[in-house]
Image (cartoon, rainbow, N blue to C red; front, top):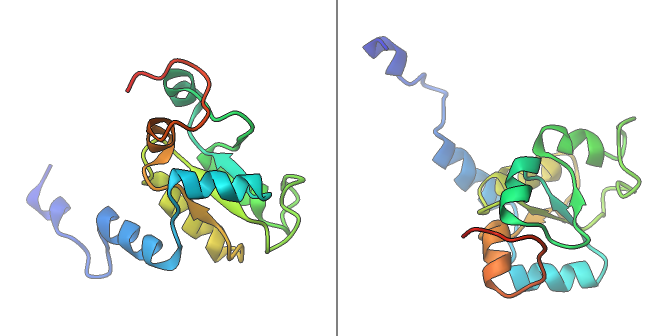
Length: 140
């Protein structure tokens, strides 16, 4: 790789900057706060790929929507939306493995107008460590 390939363009941001910006726009929740929201009707959306869910386990009742199609499935105006995408006031709690990708995903949903979108601090692994229900044999 040439040295010029590593020169950062003036308008580029690092992934850490993108993550910080996303998190500044959403109100993240702990696993227990997420469980309370789900009990009150929020949709818990697991965006992890199938291989990761198979390796780590799953949250019973979570809606599986892999990250690559999330926006199309939750945009209320998309022809590819899910039945759960009933409008812009849907309470969506996004879950990934450790709480990084889910922050970016929740912010993308917020950008679509789903103003209540959030994610779980620490992701599935924190959910499991908190003693909340899971299936499978996770190898932490």
